[in-house]
Image (cartoon, rainbow, N blue to C red; front, side, top):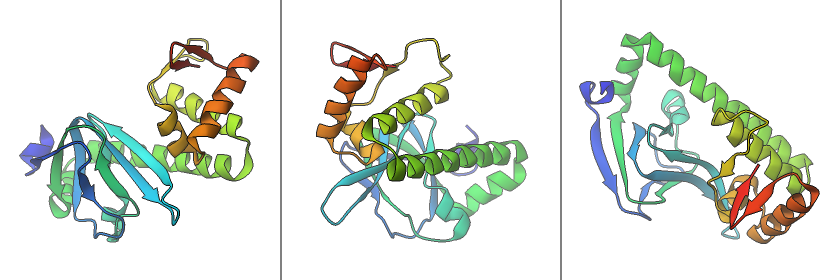
Length: 193
């Protein structure tokens, strides 16, 4: 692994352990080796808004490295997780010496920026059913699944709520409405779009 060649170390987290908190200074690049991480914010009422879920191969928390700023959110292990941790200066050296990797990081950040832009539009303008379908369609596209093929959603209703800024009760009600309209299927407890 190129990360290890540049000095990355493995960091293991138990389920529920925090990696960093909002407003901590960004100092390292992180990539999931195994497990799952959640990046989120809490509002004053204690409601969670999920910024992203990251699994094996995914990196997270890069923007504040480039802007020399603090993390805008917290991260917690959703399950036992192993990460690669690469100090900021070594990460920058890796990017300078490997332009193809630099390009891939830039492409990934641009994709996330487009998603965030879509997410803001959805939250501020549309009904819950539309927000949920937009999220599911985005996930389906990211997985490379053709539009005419059914996609099994791996997210729980709570995760959908956290990712759309809705209450879980609203997600449950809206999913039932969408099923009645024929916009998605529910088989067992799984959602298919």
